[in-house]
Amino acid sequence: MSFEILLVLLLLAFAFDFMNGFHDAANSIATVVSTGVLRPQWAVLWAAFFNFVAYFLFPLKVAATIGKGTIDPSIIDHYVIFGALIGAVIWNIVTWYAGIPSSSSHALIGGLAGAAVAKSGTESLIASGLLKTVAFIVVSPMLGMLLGSLLMLAVAWICRRMTPRRIDRWFHRLQLVSAAAYSLGHGGNDAQKTAGIIWMLLIAASASPAVGLPEWMKATTDHLPAWVVICCYIMISLGTMFGGWRIVKTMGQKLTKLKPVGGFCAETGGAMTLFLATSLGIPVSTTHTITGAIVGVGSCTGVKAVRWGVASNIVWAWVLTIPCSAFVAALSWEIARHIF
Image (cartoon, rainbow, N blue to C red; front, side):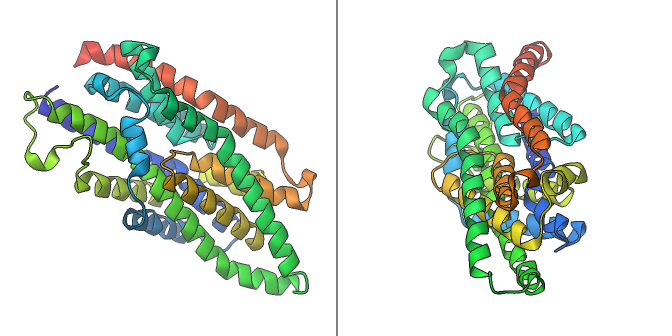
């Protein structure tokens, strides 16, 4: 690997981080836009600001899981990183174009796994880290659903003597707080995933005399340069500012009809789930989490309030994300060997 190739891969990683914010902006703003609390342009600025603020609040546990806990660090080279990133980026583009809220996180993990297996077989996978991540494909939406529905029931009981107009007025304001909390969780969990990828790349480059890294760029298994983390938070925040309206419509309008009180409960339940996962160092899908929370809120109104056909299409995207991105990553790894 040369220094020039390293720079190309860093740019590709930051491009993925930008796309992660772009693709997952709907997770942060769908409910607050669909309930009419904020206009789209103000909602994305609100979300982007709190995406970046997360840098000051969360330790790098998720980055460590991605960087050292999913595949064997000893096999990492520029081919593996290239394959992983291309696999994740292509899957994100496909699902964004189709308006499907899939997981950028699982696309990245699938890409890592696919490229690693293509190079060194299944022995290169770290089972404990991957199983923990795969388990939360189910756990995070279920926990989001549980917390969203419990919060909705609690709010309904607390506000039982209030008029609907007064409830809307209060939660119109409170939803700004819940949207900020969810954006903090989104930034804290998702930006660290790209930081983990770059961590892998810099460790491999630091160990190679041929690359000739300056001291400020070098990384070790115990040290990730601050500039990497700051750049990752900046890129995901910029991506959120340019977030796509296609997925906002799916999340905020097609799953169930939301009012400010429902938006508040969904965002708060999703934020609680993300805070828990990030504190445990588990890279979860913000998409899965908020989808589960929205479904939980909608189901409190009645089973028919949720459009289960739309929900089932989203679940299929969840199931296919890791294997599809892994397949594209494996192909990209093979192609990269003949290019670089």
